[in-house]
Length: 272
Image (cartoon, rainbow, N blue to C red; front, side, top):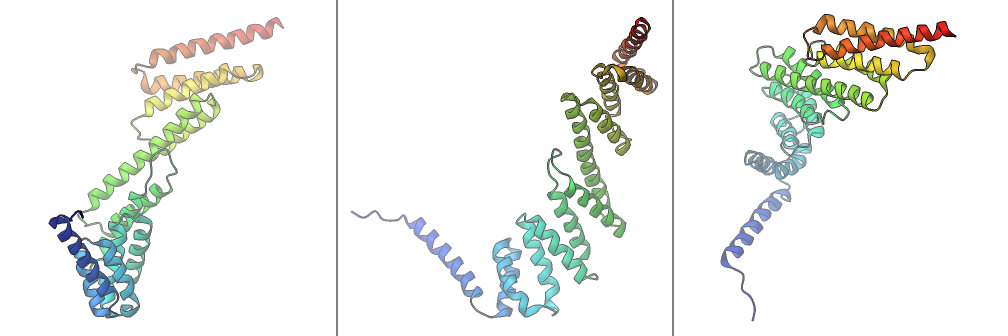
């Protein structure tokens, strides 16, 4: 005995078939006006792929005509809405270059920057896209100083810089944990230079003290005195800035131990 399809399923299949039929009918119509009109309707309904497909068909017919401004703006928008941010950024940039006086220019520039922001990866990965987004949001803020998005620009830039700062800090920690103390010192010093207002400055400076001390501890005999001296110097700099720190006692212990090591080296040299 044949199993009959539920009536609701039949209705659904007919409905889906009808939608596809409408799209295909428009797509195959060779009527530019109908194609563009329906593309905009699909765009307004959030059917991004259908809108994009029809706009691509309409482009050869409308290039250079008044309708092309709205057409290309929405075309860029379909890539953005489908999270194809590389292509979205390209087409928003293309739109702004082509239509510098458009009423959509500010929105286009914003979405171009935001497309780069959406490509910004985890702090552990390369931050090229973060750098691009920072530059684009700064340009946006300078170009549209009165925009209501100016505050949001600053918030996003701060977020991206915090991510880059975290990457820089974690690179130093990685070098430290791997016992590459010279590289750790250089990395942490670069972090301080690049992010002087960091909220982690105390911890970074403590790592610099520890890294210098461990570098001295693991150095060959001929370099120990110099490196213990360096450890004492950065330890005193730490105490001058963070004398009330919970880490201050540990830093003082490093100074004491380093002085003992230097004195031991002097005694050893005298005995020789």
